[in-house]
Length: 162
Image (cartoon, rainbow, N blue to C red; front, top):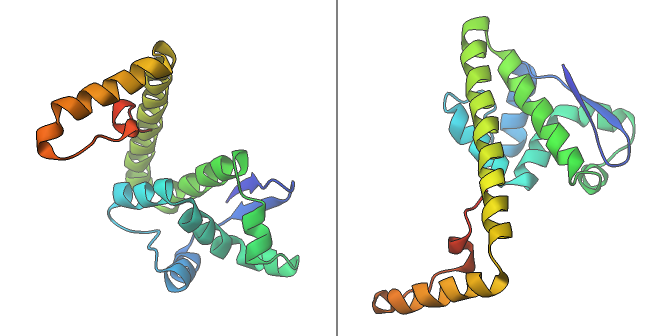
């Protein structure tokens, strides 16, 4: 069982087992035990509402005992709380599986975390190495070069996404 703290300093304990996985699947149509772990983690990473819905289902018994609604829980989930809840959830998913599969999943998660950290570092370096004027100039040049395609590039295309 993994724990995290929300922004209202409340401690929550996650427990993943067949019953709680079924409860999540029934409540939010999300399979925590999917064979495609990469796709599952990817969906959770890009959709913080889904992530918090999944986590709330996992802690719903605790919330009910303390008269905490889904809305109140959601209001306490931002920033560091989402980060620690995500880490707790991913660790709980890895620990659910038998040792051999657990080892491979742990290695995959560690690599994903390493890649994300490297991507963030490179994005920070790129952003800090250019002025706003240089970024605008690149966007304008790209628009002029790609004008025949009829498509204007987004500013986000000049900066790698995290």
